[in-house]
Image (cartoon, rainbow, N blue to C red; front, side, top):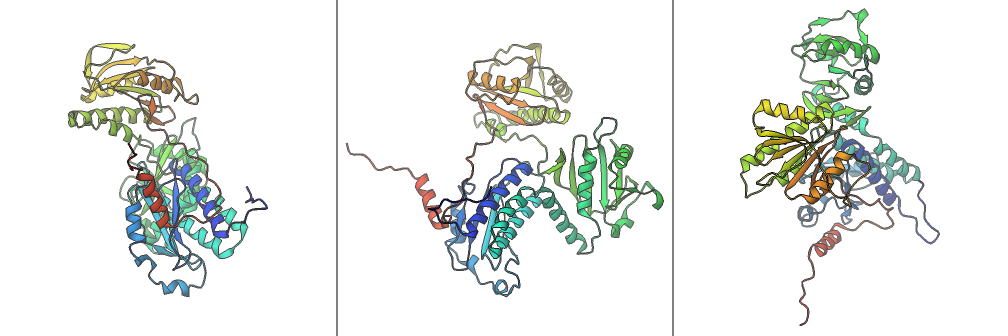
Length: 499
């Protein structure tokens, strides 16, 4: 929407508009790429200006001591940068070393138009790589510098949309940087063409089946290092943009160590041996897949777009619940690994499942299919049986002793306020059941892959509700005042009252 102010308000400066729009576009884009994400900006307009902080979602709460040490107790970050003043372009960027703050990703830089910027966002535990997100933040630095050098309302609005739709470009920029590091500026491979082909092939079915198998994209300058099982003649080499034909050819490498080899424009042959280390690999796994560079995960892809997720279930909340200092650590660790294995298998096979983790010394009675004798799930064969039983409607019932007591269990209870009609009966039944049963955790795996950890009638893995961002009307607070205000919030009034 256009920026609007009433007649009695002063139109905010260009930098305020830019910060708001870039921050909003960044949060929205990263949330599509990595799940719900916050962002924050620490900046100084000039070398003499006080550092200011824009953090409307309190991303940097808890990091006050290190920020105070770096920016208030030291002036080293203000040291003279004569090359900035000599830069031909106001928006020419000089990168700044990122800050290693726990749980955060950061990227910053300096330009003539704005002296110092450092952008922050969340480091999600499920990220394949921080590289694309760092390129995303780097682009935010460039856009803010560009907006401040142009003083044009059009650019401040446009930057928001650029960052919101930046996922493919972020992956491209990261891989291009890695190729430049490996080959200098001599790489002849078209990364954009590869990314378009990966998404195009991933959406192409063959006789109703999604693609499986791998394609290795090798720079032509090192193609001689690749060992081929077969090579195709020049006249028969398959054009990469012919997605339907490439999808058919993937059948030859499905469920094997073989992979197709491409130079980024054509499919050259099939290999099962040595390939150059600096290569891009697309690993298709049905309805999703992974992109790697030099064997390291870059991102995943599904539903026609790229994502940062490694697609492993996020069971951090479960792990925390099982950290009981008064119980046997090895037994709780084994229980966590057993449940993780069942959850992972359900996610791979894309079927829903519910797992009741009963922490009571004597397991509670749950209606369902009982067993004459509980089975030990530390036995790999019996664990495989439990994974198969998780497909049956109802929940698995696992005790704190890592034994399976029943399956197809029915979870019931009275209605609770936290119910979500957008979720199915499996999810809401787990909320009701745990609200009435003590020492019970239920892990719910949805068929479309989200995993919920439910305890005491609360979904511990649900993202926190955040208020919509409000347009900036005044300058963001200085870092000094922000730290002072944070201290007041954390220090309750303990003044004794008169008797």
